[in-house]
Length: 340
View (tube, rainbow, N blue to C red):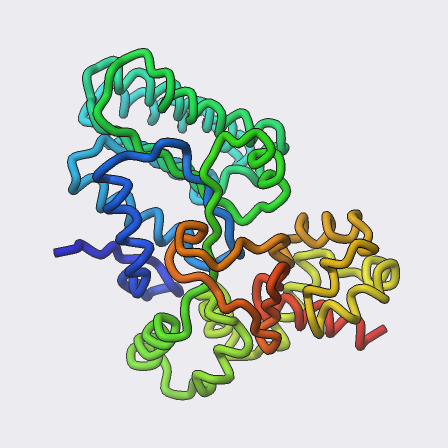
């Protein structure tokens, strides 16, 4: 029976990992055969990548893997490899860093420790790197992925299976990594409507009876669990969340006025940004601000982690080729356009 991890959702409340059945099945499949390339997973901020990876850690431990997990955003570097000296080495390095950026530089230590674990005779190894690319430039991100690939293809020691997964919401590295064909690049989307409703009902039962209707929450978040948490913490005040997004993502009047023509069309249909005359500078800015996912994968099972989004859902801001990461991100842009 699958042991589900408990995840912090709001202050004082944990929820069990839920409703990513296909995503869980994919972890079991990789555990049975290993990954022939590093799997690099891109998806919207807060869509549940970290939750899925933490569940992957538990699954792979139960499958008798030694597991190295690294997440600079949460300042977590774990080496469940059965070798005390390695764990102490990791702890010593952690005591030497004080910022997330310094922590992110320890990603190079991940590969060093993986090599050492194989040298010590461990035959099944899992390396899981979460949300590190945002702290690195695109070249460094690609080199990290290349290092994982070298570990799989040209190890110093024999092994049975290696599972290597890296996940991020940062989109600019995707092109650089894909250009070299060093990884199996997969997309992950927000939760399906059915799964998100399950999470909504769990929250409603445990903490709140005055929640907006599920349909209203779905239209605001598009199934993004992080935004569901933010809405709860602001007492369901969507305006508060929107204005925080405007400030945090740098949706300034100068940004809007510079690109008004294209943005006015994109808030109605993001695929208008797919036309050849769309300035690449605008596309890069939207990707860098983590507002859109550009060049969406075809909705083929092997191109996605878990369930892909629909081919098109303009109510949620999803186009065939481009999608707003969440409806609230689109609403933040629309709000500044209207105010100007």
